[in-house]
Image 1 (cartoon, rainbow, N blue to C red):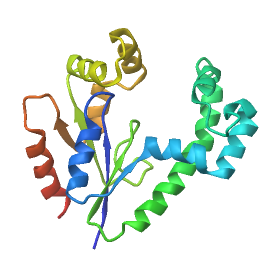
Image 2 (cartoon, rainbow, N blue to C red):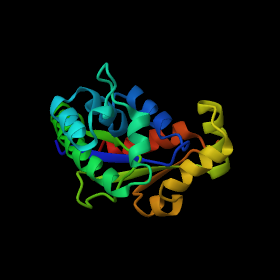
Image 3 (cartoon, rainbow, N blue to C red):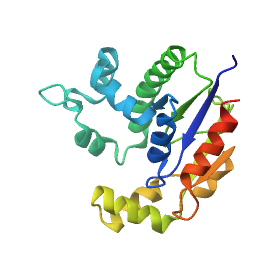
Image 4 (cartoon, rainbow, N blue to C red):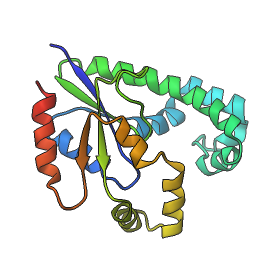
Length: 196
């Protein structure tokens, strides 16, 4: 069997987590890159050591939990430091995801969910990329409901992400989560295509 690895991405509030939940009810394994990265930052001993070497002991709390807010304050205006931190975390996630793919080798396709993604085949393991798309005003409303953030905060987060236009350029498939078209029908149709 020729297994496919499908990347799935979308901007904050687009609903990619919802789409992944629907796929998971159909027995499709999902690798959530961002949550795995958080897990590895807290659990992978060599990675923790490397982060402490880079940022100092304050990178972790006295109870040895990752000190996210302190780290964020250090890297906020320091792109070079952020790049160095990513160069420690990304290879660890890469290795973890490859082990995960081996574990689920019997499935016809797997979904790899991440906020940042390149086109399929662009120095990555993806056969295809799915982009979840939604209008900005709808995304803002969803995030306000979910996270209780101000519109200003949400717009600042969206401004830091790549634009929808850029994201759509890498799409092999698009799921429109605009509260008009049936998301379930779109996912079911895509599932039928991907499982072949």
